[in-house]
Image (cartoon, rainbow, N blue to C red; front, side):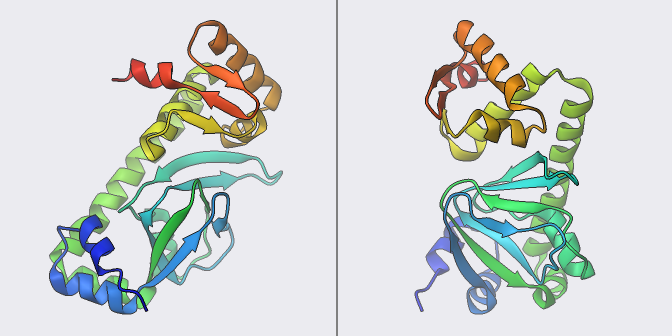
Length: 217
């Protein structure tokens, strides 16, 4: 078995050496291709997934299958909502998909409480993950409640940029509509308006949103 110690040490330089070694010993690494389902709503979660490479998209779906993007997970990050379900032995209330080719390490549930007591760095990491995800959920709620769809679309592109470092979105207008829980027609109309304003460049299943990221720099 190939050692992932170098990858763990790169992502978690603040962890104790012993903790890194335990992660290597008990963790299960998995690779996913773009678009692969990693977690689904209703699934019992028996291990905590932590991103080592790539980006993971966390979403909620309604009864009709419409999707609402909650947040992205980047390398070195864990999903606190999955952690809560894992520790509480509850069914997942979110779904997770690989936004690009990704590698995860899954930590068995029985290790999580032990490490909270045994390793101060792990406790700090988990508390930080909870706070960061909570803040991101508040941002999502604020966006849905208070922002117009054009502002939400701009925020979507910027969130995609922060997660991937890319200024190109590859996909259909329907994909974005799914993420923002709206219709394809609304997204297509807004994208045309943004193109007229010079904010995006549109081609077949490719959207260059470089000017939008420039606004945040």
